[in-house]
Image (cartoon, rainbow, N blue to C red):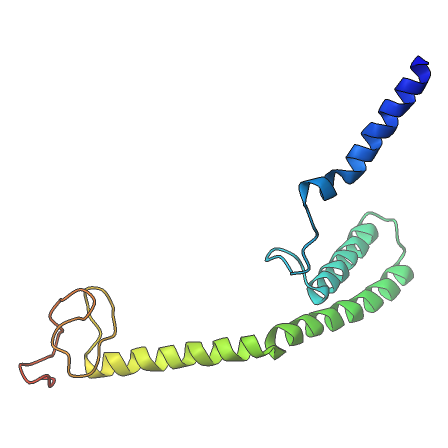
Length: 151
C-alpha cells in the first residue's frame, strides 16, 4: 500500500514539474531579444571560433601542416562568407538606411544652426533662426542682436 502511495506521489511531482510553465502562464516569446544573436551573427561567431580552434590545434601540434592549410583555407572562406552575410544583413535593412538618413538630417540641422548662430552655448539646444534667447534654457544667444540678425 505504501508503495502505491509513493509511486502516486512521484507521478504527481513529475506531472507538476512538467506542467509548471503552463500553470504559471509562461510562454515562449516569438520576438527576438536584444541580446539574442541573429542567424548571420551566429554563423559569423561559429566560423571565427572554428578558425581560432584550428589555429590552436596547429600550434599545439594536433594538426600537421597539410591538414592545417586545408582546414584554414576552408574555414577562412566560410568566415568571410559569414562576415559578408552579417554586414549585408545589418546594412541592407530599411531601418538601417532610415536611421542613417535621420542621423545625416540631424547633422545637417545642427551644422545649419551653428552657421546661423542659433545653437545655445549653455545647453546646446538648436533654436529657430532669428531667436535672441534659447527656447530651452533662456540663455542669450551669442551673435543675436535686437532685430534677431547676426553681428
